[in-house]
Image (tube, rainbow over all chains, first blue to last red; front, side):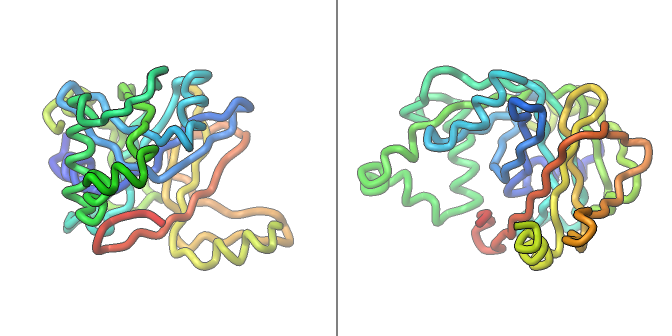
Length: 168
Length: 73
């Protein structure tokens, strides 16, 4: 995998995550996602916004587009599209720090967005307990594409999925 | 409603457009200077060559980012 693609996956603050609604229409949200060492992505959604999980339980096919470089520090921004199969756990993760994947996700999120650390403080947990009640989503990549620049009028390069394990 | 959508869309320099490919997976790209024509009811999108999607529903998402904290609004 080109190192530029790895930089994008590691450093872009958000990606556009798409699931498929019951009628087959795509639904897209900006989310944070973390690439794990085993090559899967982990993300989560608040129990107040469970539509992503509902969609995934009906149709596992999803995509993640890393295309917004703002704040990432990446000097030559391109884009990466991941297509994969997702799982949404039935149980609610009430303590994100108890799940190592979610803990890593949270730490990455706070490093990227220090102002959000308030939510993990004692006061934040007391005021917004629902913030920590999350549904965990894992995405296993099936195909990955890379645009060296953000020029989407050109065709992308297909990436070797095995290389994702080296990026996480 | 679509006239209002066209006004909002014009405020964003980019939009993410998502459709579905032949294998049923979503495909997203970024479209610069998105413009929705409320009269024709169409938003032209330049799609990458050799990267086909099927005819059907699609979605357009615009979300600005703040540089300091990187959050979406």
